[in-house]
Amino acid sequence: LARTELNYRRFFTINDLIAVRVEDPAVFEATHATVLALLDEGVVHGLRVDHPDGLTDPGAYLARLRERSGGRWTVVEKILADGEPLPPSWPVAGTTGYDALRHVDAVLTDPEGARTLVEQYRAFADPEPEEGGEWHATARRAARQVAGHDLAAEVETLVRIATRVCASGLGLRDHAPWALRTAVRELLVRVPVYRPYPEQSPAETAAVLTERAAEEARAAFDVPEEAHAVDVVRGLAAGTLTGLSDTAGADAFRARFAQVASALHAKAVEDRAFYRYVPLLSACEVGGDPGSPALAPEAFHAFCARLQREWPETGTVLSTHDTKRSADARARIGVLAEFPRLWGEFLTGAVRRAGKDAAAAVGLPFTWAAWQTACALLPEDGTPPSESAGSSADRLSGALLKHAREAGLHTTWTEQDPAYEEAVERYVREGVTGTAADQFPALAERLGPYVRARVLAAALLHLTMPGVPDVYQGTEHDLRTLMDPDNRRPVPSPAGALRTLGSGGRPTGLDEEKLALTATALRLRRERPGLFGAASGYHPVTARGPAAAHCLAFGRGPGTNPPLLTAVTRLPGALHQAGGWRGTTLPLPPGRYTDLLAGADPRPTAAYEGEADLAALFAHRPVALLLREEE
Image 1 (tube, rainbow, N blue to C red):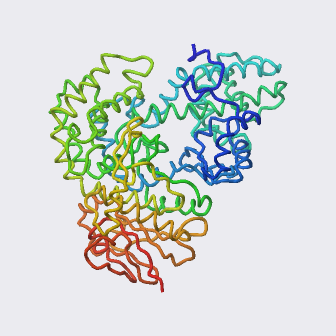
Image 2 (cartoon, helix red, strand yellow):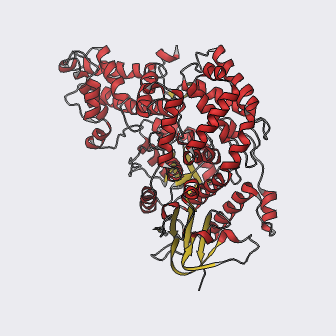
Image 3 (cartoon, helix red, strand yellow):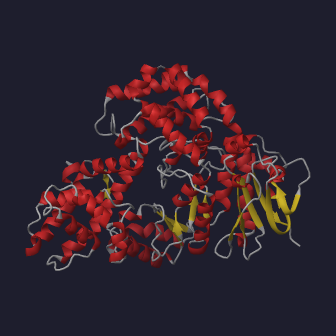
């Protein structure tokens, strides 16, 4: 009966992950004794707090944690909507880094190509707007379903509290439970961020529960007088409803509404809509915005400048235990936005080889997602998924079955359709990794140089932008993993390859190239901490010439004359199609700069002064890490 009769807090929809009341000081001490002891013993140096939005009062919890931990470096897993700030009163260093993930991925995504992929997807799959055809409609429909099904018990708890509060005041007794239930649901599905917070002012909360959202919620009522229930629920959620007798109930409603809003957003958007709206799967990532998958360089620079100014020691990340796909898997999908025509030709041929009837059995939106998912696992040499290491057929089957259940259009975790799930398994094994697997080598060969550029660019941006980079296990290499549990498999140690590179060996292949880049950047952070952190700065650098938009560069270090420059190739496929660099240059601050990533080259290391010709700078690799020579 948990779906409808649950009477305790839980983690999203997992009944046996029962929430504990850490707002109670005794509970806090009991549940945090071990981690605080590890901090005191020096075993642990910092803390990462996952899903603080599920707490009654995240700000109060974090304040207590800071006090008890002695102010240790702490970051919070907070998903921020576009333009939403991290609450400035929270005593933390910043987020775990999903906001950085979104900005790095988006600035490396071709906006025109992404729009073309949406058009191709709609023409190929013809999904209904609310079932994958249009992003916002899909997210709203998913939210309604989750509120009415998966989180029905949580919604009913809100209705019961609101009913008691209304019954305690003569002026509110005319609001029936069904009307309050409708108002709660209609407002919940319109919260544009994860949740409001207790420390927010009424004006700040009103920015979350907007009048426009209230107007749309009122439209769900046929009788205008009954629509006043929306104003009651909105006032309770914002803490602005006055003249109440049951103030304790009102406080409880406000806290619970915020908690349910965060769970609803996570389950409806990340765990459902992301699996229904699939034109470009690389944008369907934790913290991402599939409706706006691309970002201009100016917006990326503005984001980084704000991090350096407000949250210089925040976490940054590209892959975690929770990402749907690792950064390098997303790179192989994201680069398709630069080659939408090639993707269309590949998909047409692959579907024909695998059989159109088989595609129809699993649905065309799923078919599209299945082939993009398979592209995510392509190794550099283009080995078909059925033959590559780690039994990719098994990995794809598991990931795509999970994809189908999360989408919830044909089968779900709790109401499974065995016939449909068998069709999914058959399509993956007989089509994607079977008769049509020979389509992959040619695609991998065409995309290989551009995948390399995107993988290395994302890694270097991550390791040198403002913040503290979190390097997830195995991502020192070119790591291609899918959603949990695929991303939690054992990974090889980089120790052997690092010894080879350290003894003068030259990187061979993308795997070692990425390892060498990661090692170089992390050693620099260790040896020259002043180039990073709170005392550093962030300085956008703009290239000059016909291909200037394809170079993303910035300087790091204190002062106005940055001693370190990061430069990466942006949208390499579009750059190639436009004719290359064609004399484009990168202006340099005063001094002589050398590329730290050129250390393994057999040629003499070049020095750059005044400006760098980008064709020469990127002649051997699509990224550069330029350090000013010490005088």
